Image 1 (cartoon, rainbow, N blue to C red):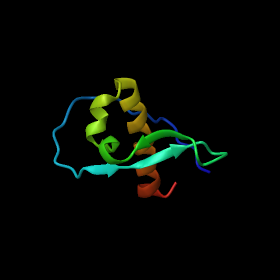
Image 2 (image 1 turned 45 degrees about the horizontal axis):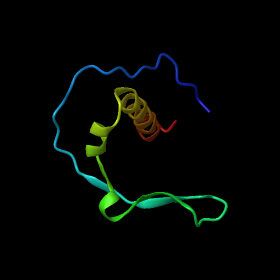
Image 3 (image 1 turned 180 degrees about the vertical axis):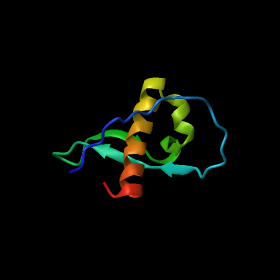
Image 4 (image 1 turned 90 degrees about the vertical axis):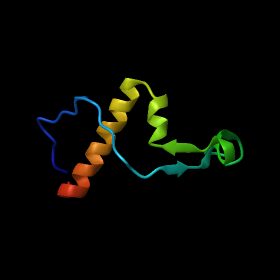
Length: 79
């Protein structure tokens, strides 16, 4: 697998964009039993993206953006 070098993702300002909104729904359950619900984000508890970004800390936002950027690089450059 190729290595990514001289890579950085640095917060450098703000932007206003018109983007789609995604509704994220589901349940997180215990992997052994598939019965015990750890988190339920269905119905009124759905998560809206990108609105949920405002509920995350700056560090969490930065980590998420880095993960997304890595996926974008994979899509764009096939690595």
